[in-house]
Length: 327
Image (cartoon, rainbow, N blue to C red; front, side, top):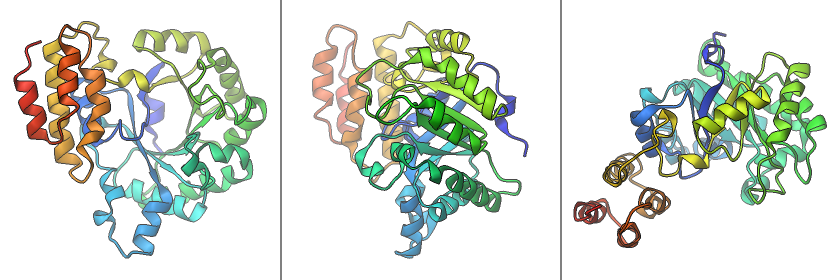
């Protein structure tokens, strides 16, 4: 299989999957300002994709979860992230992802959300290492049915559950020979309450070298900007660096821009709101509040404008408030 992973520069920089953040609307905006080398979607439930079709008889095109997987050509290469702990549903979801034209499928083995862990998925899989190989094999079978030759299968996980267990956990993950592996440098127990343990990334790279040298490895956690990403890549030997929270309010993150005017911030938020209304019409407009907080900041009068925008419940109301703003 001719994988896009082998064609990336080193180090390369990737956009992390974040629920209700890296949605189709924000990803489109990011791509317009300057796309990363690789883009991840928000995670989507493999069980949800499967059961909506099998139990409710809903066609894939009618499934709201499938609508969350829409993307633009400007976002390529783009990887769809799915979660689940049942090989049958992972197989189906991977086939669907390949059929939809994604460049890769990524399996979430690190999300700490309790509702996801109750399904045995996300970080819960760290406690059931025997499921890793069947899940990856199922993803490959599905991807091969969805596209001739298949698409790359990658994984994203953490350094342990209650405590750091890289020396036992990562070899299990790497034994499945994923095309790429992203390591979030915190345990599940730590959540985001402590600094990411970047001092451990070189050991993760060494484990990759020992157990699956052809696997591309990325580090993730507390990466501030591209300069910070370059420093962390050089220090650790990671092939790539994934940036997550740094993207809040900075769709130009992957362009090395430093100076951005208030007027540019306002215009970017306006465009994002338009894309949100177009691409996510069934979603609550209030999901934009986290973006309002991060875009409208850093100048005199920003707090007052931000307060007014937080009360907007439609695109028209938001645009009216922004039109009257004088940064």
